Length: 267
Image (cartoon, rainbow, N blue to C red; front, side, top):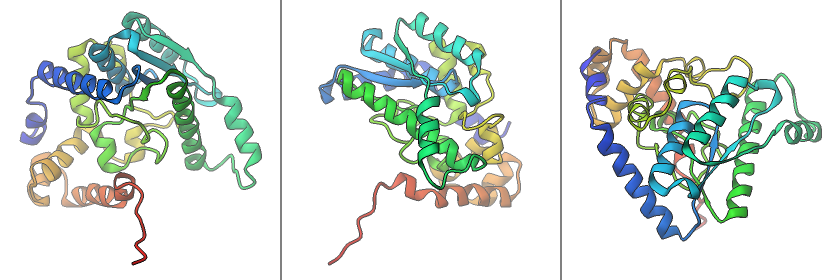
């Protein structure tokens, strides 16, 4: 492990979790809402997010929504979601989104069953629409589960999982999320899962990104938090400068996802 990887994880998980919870509680109270809605998948990020929300707000102010669909349904994830939310004392709703996706695919004239990316993003956006229905229904905010690694590289669906009202783990890199998750009691079997967005069968985050989080995070941390040069980062992480440049390319390419909607000035 290089210096960057060590420094990335050199923090007090208890203090970080407490700070997140304190700020989250203040934000929700200031917003004048009844609590939050969290989409849960059985993965690390959503499990950590819903756990932090409960720690910050209390279980009665947190609603969890599990939104499986037939193609990528994993019974182990479903079991993990039910166990986690039961242990947290959170109200869980399960909404199978297979039918609305099917109807949309049949309605859109250019839909293509072989277009994995477009179809996967459609699933994510249907989930977001569902979460906001619950948020409107119960007077709550949507707490998203995106982490800093995803936000910087743009590894999320625009107006899909990238759309939320607050991001409890948005300032934590993926590897940092693992450390916080361990501290707050997220089950080890969830922490150890292979990260996936569930976009299609066999899809994983690291395959799509083309790099493992244990390599990606120190690169991002060195470049954007510590403002180090490409060569210094590459040397510490043990990769070529080309790899560092490719990561920078991902960040730049997806800037449009982070900057909001641009206004074209007429005057």
